[in-house]
Length: 77
Ligand code: SF4
Image (cartoon, rainbow, N blue to C red; front, side):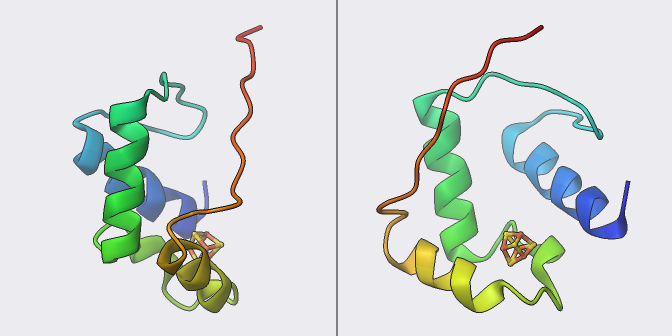
């Protein structure tokens, strides 16, 4: 797990009250998605974003209310 992955897992673990590690799975429901988007937009879950080259793009996506983003379902093997 890279430092960025670890920082992201830590932030989302704290936000959702879970202990997430590399490879962890959890059900993404409407409440969790809303909480994750709100925290991302507020910048409170973005420790992993420090020095990332994509910050401007991700800032723009969040500022736009995540419009145009798509989620797809997958099945657990
Ligand atoms: S800025 Fe975007 S791509 Fe970079 S770590 Fe954060 S969420 Fe991921």
